[in-house]
Amino acid sequence: MRRIWRFSAGVTAITIAGMVLGQLDKVVLSKMLSLAEYGQYMIAFALAGTLYLFSGPVFNAVYPRFSSLVRSGERALGAGLSPGHAPAWRDSLSPCDAACGVSGRAGPGLDGRPRACRSARLLLPFLAIGTALHGVMHVPFALQLAYGTTRLQVAISAVLLLVATPSTVFLVLHYGALGGALAWLWLHSLYMVLGAWMNPPPPAEGARGEMDRVRRRRSIRGCRRW
Picture: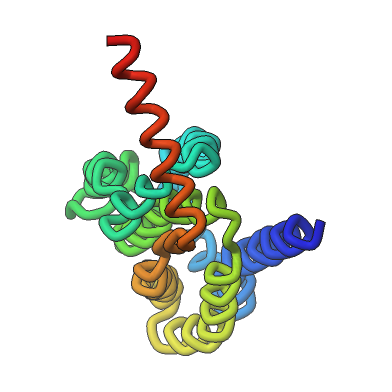
C-alpha cells in the first residue's frame, strides 16, 4: 500500500508540474507582451502543438506494453530502449518536426497577408523543435512509469520549475515574443539532457535470479514443444 501511495503521489506531482510548465510561458507572455505579439505567439504555438497528436497516442500505446513486459520479467527491454531514447520514435517524429518548423517556409498558411501570420512564422521553428524534443521524451517517461519509478521525474520537474520562470522572463524582456519561443526550446532541451539519466533501475540479485529461472522454464517448454 505504501508503494502504491508513493507512486500515486509522484504521478500527481509530475502532472501538476507538467500543467504549470505547459502554461507558464503563456502567463508570462500575456503580462509582458502586447495583445498583437501575444496573438502571434499563440498562432505559432497552436501549429507546433499539432506534434502532440503524434506523441500522445504513442505514449498511450507503449506504456501498457512496457508495464506488461516489466511485470513478466523482461527488464532487459528498458536497457535497450532508454539510453537511445527510442530511436525509432525519434526518427518517426523528426520529419514531422522538419515539415512544421525547420524550413524557411514553415507552417501552412503563414505566408498569407495577415501580419500576425507572417510574424508567427519566425517563432514556429523554435516552438516546433521544443515540442518535438518533449514528444521524444514521452517514451523513456513511459518506461519509467512502467518500472513504478517517479522519483527521478519529480526531481527533473522540480529543476525545470526552478529555471522556467527566470529564463522565460529574461528572454522575453530581451527578445519579446521570440524570447518566449526560445524559452520553450531551452526548457525542453534541458529536459532532454536531464532525461538522459532516465535509465530503468537495474534488477536486484534476487530479481536477476528469478529472471534466469523464468528464462530456463521457457527454454525447457520450447524444447518439449519442439
